[in-house]
Image (cartoon, rainbow, N blue to C red; front, side, top):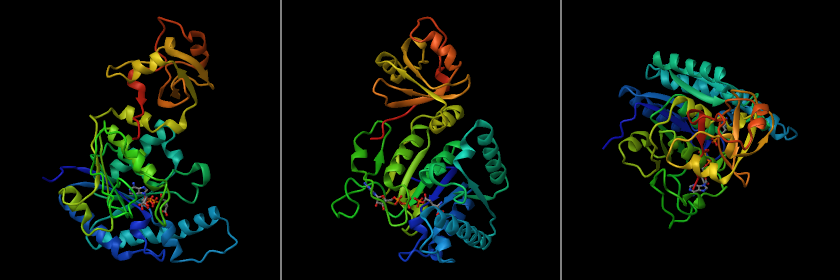
Length: 362
Ligand SMILES: Nc1ncnc2c1ncn2[C@@H]1O[C@H](COP(=O)(O)OP(=O)(O)O)[C@@H](O)[C@H]1O
Ligand SMILES: N[C@@H](CCC(=O)OP(=O)(O)O)C(=O)O
């Protein structure tokens, strides 16, 4: 039976678009564009998150051996992104489709207003039947300003746009229960919200041109599925992989979504890096928050306040072992929280509606 997704984010990894010699694989791009065109013809909305700028740059310019890694990446990406988007534009125009370039940085997800502006831009593109092609703005995103990789970016976009599905195309058939190169390893076909233990199979190993590897993919996939979005990790080098995934005809790893979460919670879920402060909570509060019942964080369960924050800021929630368990929006400042610390009958510091708790990865 075909999966009936309407809004789909397709993330295309560097390795899918790159030949073994590091040069862009135009034939592969052409085939992916054909598949996306088919989805568009079926009335689906498709947003592409495409890596490949650096690989495209490599085909155009030779970098000096003296240049450092950051500068080389800036040069290759700045030159390569033009070629990448031009290639997409030419290929889509052969099918009478228009695509748009959307380059983003971590900063664009920083506050609610930036977030809403970006969301608005996607909405107008989709309303006009344009295919957004998103990539990180590698020219200004360097070192700590960078997304872990485009998988993280794709997860953010999927949750921002309330997508039905995120399909991550990589150079493996999915997450294997061992080394992907070992013929005895098999693809884990389904990860349910309650599945545990699969994280042990994922190593920090990554492919020749990839950045984050399978570890970030599985972290992100878990989080996105927790927000109510199906996530598939599939092989972008397999012929007709997109229709095959949707018709359940290809081996891939599918993360089954939890029941849906509000847009506000989705934003909070991805705001961990923008937290202004943190609170450490006791074991009782942790048990209450992680139980099935909707519970707000009360000062009585807080043992420590870390850093300064104002009403409306994102704050992290840590357990007694300093482990991050989630984040939420503070209902009042750190000064007021200090006054109420450990006291009973006080207003919640984080209301349940503004609280997001992380799932275990595996
Ligand atoms: N359990 C596993 N199953 C599949 N791949 C794995 C696993 N553990 C590590 N990997 C590595 O993750 C790589 C894919 O991630 P990555 O290199 O970031 O690719 P991409 O460019 O598509 O984002 C695989 O090529 C493989 O080397
Ligand atoms: N923004 C970079 C890609 C970075 C990246 O995350 O790559 P990948 O791990 O292959 O998805 C580029 O366009 O070359």
